[in-house]
Image (cartoon, rainbow, N blue to C red):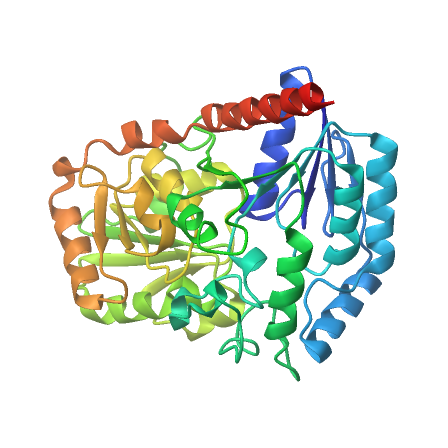
Length: 405
């Protein structure tokens, strides 16, 4: 069995790592895999093809900024991708993020319909069924259920427009383009996103939940040099981690916590830009990036509590990483973030309630013995088991396609 995975990136971000991990599982199971990606770099030891160029990326961004139409540029890059897939002749095409300024969705889906191969599409956000937004919870919008118009976020949220709110056109064209694919199976990493898909114009496709998984060999309780660098015997460590601290990730709540928590608590944030590090409260320790996964695991292990103050999210793997390092999680009741947290490994508080967030942090830090099931909970998300579900789905759709032929 030959599988092509398509994603914006290959070796960075949570989705890029998922694609890479899945590649390794596919190869270990005796099948073949090719990752086609838009930008960035890829490990040299795997089979990949990069379809985008810097010039095309910036051209696509400019096109999006001017027209507000997202996913309708990158014609030549999409033609290159189509040629590579035709040459590879896969049995299954697995899509991840098809947004990110590298793909022309109209050309690509016309090709998929002609090729008539089984397609698995993992949705990592809500972009596929809206006229603009990857997430809409922050502004409480539900126009996507009937037809997007007058977008509140077209200038302020990814994929960003500057001049024209083109969400009416985007919504209509996506609905036409994404429907009518005979052999499409949708996967979501959370029940929350699955339920949204079932209310969208993609509702006629089969959809199943396959949770994101993590490497339990890399994320586990560890001690190291960082414990001497950041830890004080009389302080509780409150940790926050993000790949990029955009507004929806809740940086403002950590600023408020710094003023509301006593000196017994030390907040550490990972993933801040240099500008953010200079601007945040002096009570917060800011880290731009960890040197490696082991250093990140040390920080998780050092923390008394991991706080996910996200306002929009699908199924954040940072929750799982913290649990695997035996650290309880406090999260806002946001999207799929709540699905990995129960009363034995953390607390869920109402979105945006800073007082209850502070109380939850203080309670967990002073009652650590009540949260002894963190590692046990994390074992439910062993990436080996989660990717086995993908292999089972591949086999199912592969056999169904052979039978129909």
